[in-house]
Length: 342
Ligand code: SP5
Ligand code: ZN
Image (cartoon, rainbow, N blue to C red):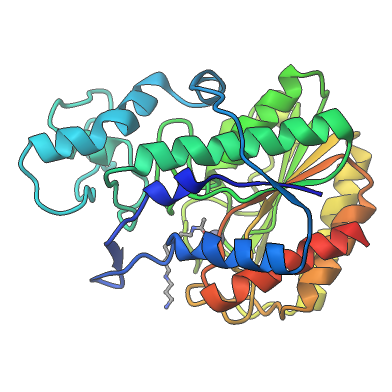
């Protein structure tokens, strides 16, 4: 198996995350990739490769140009405006105000392009996000060329990033960018299966009205789980995309058996809808020890997940999303990949 990784993902070194009313050290930290890399190397899962730079063109195929420019310039504008800390939004075009006008102040633009306040923008965030989507593109390119599974150790993650919004630790939607690229290279319908604990609201939004990307997500029930405002079972797609968006909201504490039953259902839908590629948004925050999540996977259960994914029988690229129990995420990722290879 080919594994794609770049040291540039470390360029995002945020110091602050607004968590439960306190500024804490971010859960989404560079140590995450250190530990995954260490375990991948120890278990000799596959060869490590650096992605090439694909530039902004594949990003602009799914994201708004104004948003991309904002991400590129935000940190410099924030500093130029004399702000001391990291760029954290604290005002939005909320429902009672105007959203048809983009004010010039960086604080206003920050809120306009944000969907949550936990995620700060820092020096190096844009560069790390660029490296992360390059990793996703290289993984998909490899799978397209060989038919072999690949793993992209993306960081920052991507599935919360929407057409023109960041949040939930995500800036560019790596899986969405990669799926669009696969379509351009001749695939007819790509399935994105999102197993992260949190709903992939960004990915859902990007493809909601389309039938060439099937989006399926298993996640904590948004009634009680971030991102709260999307991810319900009645969101089934729109227009010709009707039936090509499937959500499985599951209560906190859901057993692995119940989760696996939902996965079987998801895989049956992928088979029925004639997808010719599978992209997995691989969040390992479904682990029982995850500090911000509430599912019950043990490390061993991740092997079973890998085996089930392999049974789909499709060219498969797995892209890293969340997973914050830093001591265990390496083993959990390795177990999925070993399961795929079996
Ligand atoms: C990619 C990804 O996994 N993003 C997750 C972003 C979650 N951000 C907000 C989390 C709020 C957690 N609140 C739960 C508190 C548990 N004590
Ligand atoms: Zn997550």
